[in-house]
Image 1 (cartoon, rainbow, N blue to C red):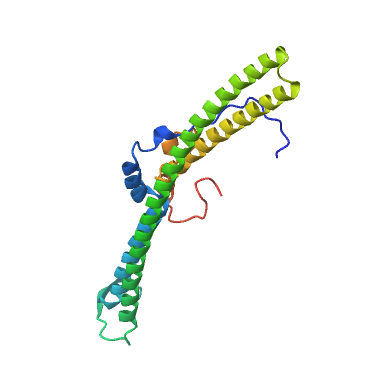
Image 2: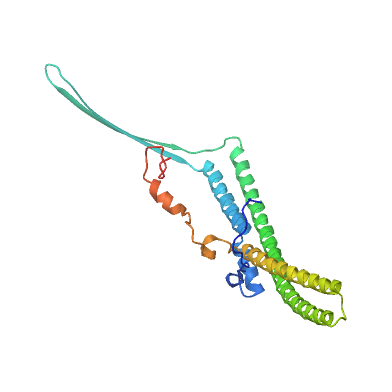
Length: 243
């Protein structure tokens, strides 16, 4: 695919150690930490804040404007004057056609919709965890079965070779036994691959497929650091990285 021959290949390592030890615990973590569930929870928070913003249209609005000036007029006699004023204005909405009330009702209906969406995502997360757990158990059982198949094929091949040595089997029988052993080894490698994939699938279903959880030796982006770098930048258009 990339035009480079493979070097030293090694078997994949499953991440079972990072997943919950029991199915019940995996379901709980999946319903709380699954990416789709977290996104739905944020959707509920946003919808609730939207209701508060919509209700703000019905609240009174108080504004205060202050100004001060100092001047002088050089003439025969210097005249100095100082003026200061504070102006307060209170606006109380009484009725503006009912549009605000309609927006509030719409926002509340959206909250209910987002809560239903959260329940749906939790049910889907539970189903995904149960399915991933079953696939992982099936992959483990398949490894045991294919391992036994490889051992049996090796014993059968040795027996066929001994029989061929004394003239009771033909070269074709030996080749067929070797092919059965190759097929068994291929099935074992496939089962090992399926176990690795299933372990990562389960870890993703419970919300643990992250760089922090996997302990990867990479630079992890922290949005809090970027916020601290630009929170006091009142002017300028450059980012901290110079762009």
